[in-house]
Amino acid sequence: MLEITDLEKRFGAVAAVDRVSLKIRDGQMVGVIGRSGAGKSTLLRLINRLVEPTAGSIVVGGVDVVALKGAALLAWRARCAMIFQQFNLVPRLDVITNVLLGRLNQHATIPSLFKRFSDEERAFAVRALHRLDMAGQALQRAETLSGGQMQRVAIARALMQEPTILLADEPIASLDPRNAAIVMDALRTINREDGITVLCNLHTLDTARRYCDRVVGMANGRVVFDGDPTALSPDTVRAIYGVEGDGGEIDEDITSTSLDLAESRPARRAAV
Image (cartoon, rainbow, N blue to C red; front, top):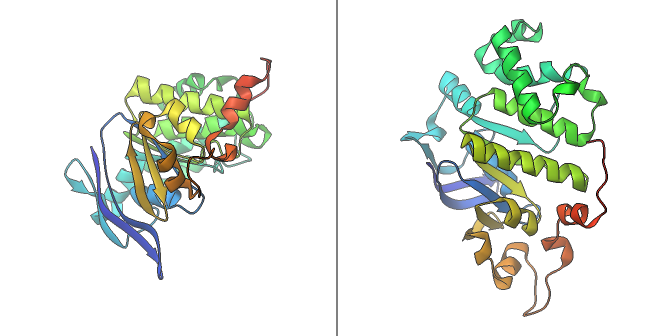
């Protein structure tokens, strides 16, 4: 279990994350929703220790992640893999090498850069790409891929770390509808088949409802909802997204998602 207690991150007088407490069971798929600036990305970066907390604790298996340093911190970052909106691939390297870079924590940096990976690691990378329907592009340079393909390669790279927790920071924000659906389907499959805990930051409520077991709503750095997606009332959604009014319809751009648009269009084969 991941236990977050009174977690806080301040930038001067601004609390990006303000006394957040959560308990996340192993194997859950959790969607974190809210407007831009709500604290979603900072929360994930705090969990991964890419950002140092101002206060609070992050405990996994009785170990406070906030106290980790050196090799222990690197081991945590391997166990708690991160997927970014910008993909963070090396454009001029081929796909399989980008995936193999997920094993950097188990190698000296220089040998890894010269592609000195074992046959077992290469086989693992091919299997990861196959799961994401990307094995056919293994020898292509990353810069030749579409955005959706790049994100799937990034997910395969994360799998190379053999994580127990997968943090996805706005993984579909820059993707077209069909690619967004493919990426979310992949994350849900990994969660179900591998039992990996997935925390996924999402802008749209409908995406969280469709894919997640649990939704955490954030506003102004605080958790304002935590529960089953079906328990989200219109008033709660207004509190999360800062929408004014009583009883009116909530704006479509808040609750609708590009995945709905993909489903409403005639089916056709597309490069992804």
